[in-house]
Amino acid sequence: MKTFLNRKTFFTISTLIIAIIAMSFKSLNKADAIINADKEILTVINVITPKEGQQEKIVELLQKGMTETMRYQKGFISANIHKSLDSEHVIVYAQWKDAAALQEAVKLIEAGKAPNMLEVFSNSTPDYHPYDVISVNLASKKK
Figure 1 (cartoon, rainbow, N blue to C red):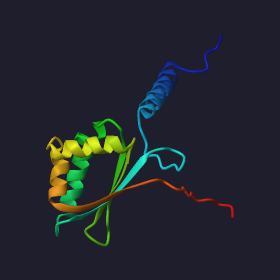
Figure 2: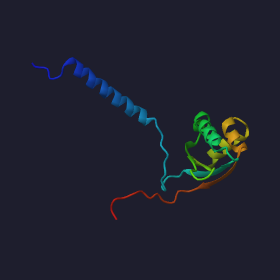
Figure 3: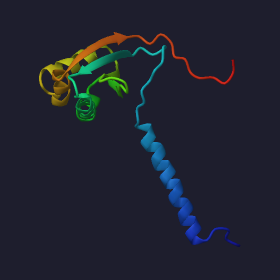
């Protein structure tokens, strides 16, 4: 019986298949931000006004705070950090399971157990409010 694949080709294809399977398993553990009017998720939009000239520092502190502390809190779903291009503002679009989970995170920050987040709020004026998603409008090619 004639072999269609030589040994090198077989190992190359096998390696690719294993890599694809591994990437599939990795993506299963990844959580994405969910913007869906049908989901019961607490959305918090925080408009942060840093002290003059502190926008970059606030962004860095927020990123550290999210990756080192907040993402591990019970009820945390996601946080997206936006930096204004025409002013010093920074916006955080965060999602929590519910108000109780958010309140626990606030207590954590107030207790000094999230030092990067505490520094953010000490060097800026935060203005945050909870929201419900009413609708999601996606692009469409048809009119």
